[in-house]
Amino acid sequence: MTEPIVLPEFSSFGDQTISGLDSPEEATAASQSVLQEARNSGRPRINDPGESHLTLHRGICREGAWYRDAEVRELTGADEEAFAAAGTSAPKVFETLLLRGTVRVGGEPMSPKVAAELLIGDREELVVAIRRATFGENLEFERLPCPQCGELVDLTVPLGALPSVSLEDPEQIEFEVPLRHGATAAVRLPTGEDQAAVLAIKSNAARRDSEILGRCVLSVTQPDGAVVRRPPAQTLKMADRQAVLRFLGDTQPGPRLNQFSFTHESCGEEVELPIDLAVLFRGL
Ligand SMILES: [Zn+2]
Image 1: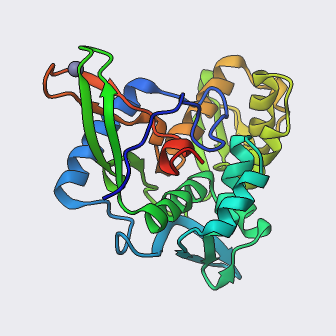
Image 2 (image 1 turned 180 degrees about the vertical axis):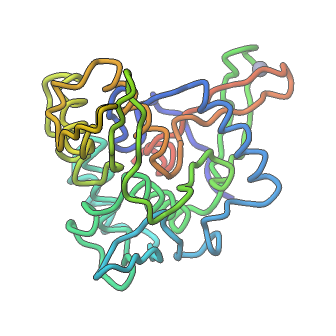
């Protein structure tokens, strides 16, 4: 039997801290449908639950070909010491986990370079797989107070039941986002490298948004056909900035661990239960 988890205070999962990317309503709807699907069919992207191999959403590109297969391994005491040395910063712990727990992506051994190339969602998919290889499929919660009725709930949540988003076309690199006044933006999805650049900015959320927009907006096309390549993020209109950030957040594939919720059967209410790194790895 696995040990029950004591719920810590929730922070964001890993380094999923890019602001402006949340959409709670859609998330709840998505988590419900995915949960239902997972109950029926299991999570489609995991080749063999409980094992150490998985298929990523996009993977890495080498000489024009995409490689999506990846291998993770069970964590050991040596890893645990490395995590302790990484300190308490969630992004640092996440990066250490990812680098140590991932064996390879495609034919390449895991490295900081490979980790930087991967989509944010692929990085999170790997960390969930490392969790599965280390502690198994189920998250166990014991005596979790229901915020709606106060009753204490025991709950088992299979990792495969957590909400997740897939890419329609794994090889689509550029996406079009409609902007105001008939303009469109061509964008790409953020990777580990983009995320690291955003996290390096400590000052404020707007500057972080500008950093991600400056990296991921490739061009803006006006209705008259005029194209501005790599527009400075500060020149984008506020509503357009938000539209692009929302698109990037909604389209990024991967687990939506901070959007998990369940229906408490006794009271019939929906209870939000965001899952973070500490819950996944038992207080790591
Ligand atoms: Zn309840």
